[in-house]
Length: 251
Image 1 (cartoon, helix red, strand yellow):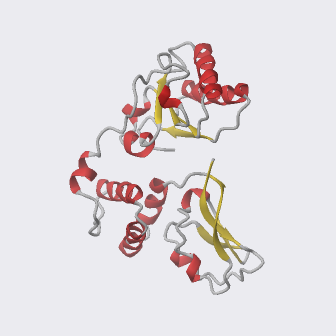
Image 2 (cartoon, one colour):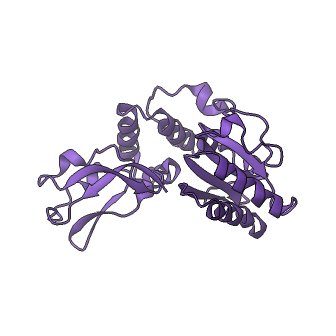
Image 3 (cartoon, one colour):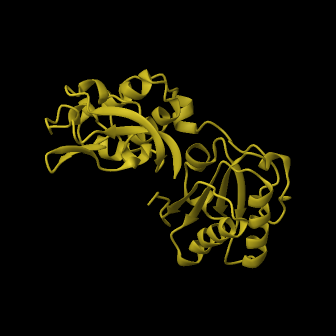
């Protein structure tokens, strides 16, 4: 969970007319029990395309704790709705300068064989990737000093060793803007990991911690280690976990 902009619907004002639903191609809004409701934070980009379509002024944008928006889930959902909805979504991202989300959407659509409307996303960047997003060294959890300068006020990504090999979009989707620590909870000393992670959290005002792990049972140990380290540090740090399948898909 992290603090971000997201849609808020005033149920007292909403009459369930549904005018907002077609203007949310991401699929975040549905009419449930005669009221418009945000069905999942994961689908709401917080850009407000639906706000101006409410005749009663029941929709606004607020900043609160919410699950991070997931463009991969959104574009998979949108692609099923046809070319017109795809084009509207891409134009929506382009108008708001959401280049990163636009790149993710175009990459997925091309991979799945869809006809992609013209965008400003370059072919080389879509097909070949934008290059490495790694911003520090070392990256092995055992080797990183707890007070390394790059950890100060960082957004931390703790990844299982196998994740970058299994998930092709690791740099683009997960690593960008984050400090990386990698390790294997099965092959390495879990207690030493716990100790180091606790020291890192205690010594640095981390903005967030994301754990990227594989779906295999042993890999969930990395999630538990980070959760326990946060608990021992007695600090409040926004935390999220991302589960990757053995086929390289985000679950």
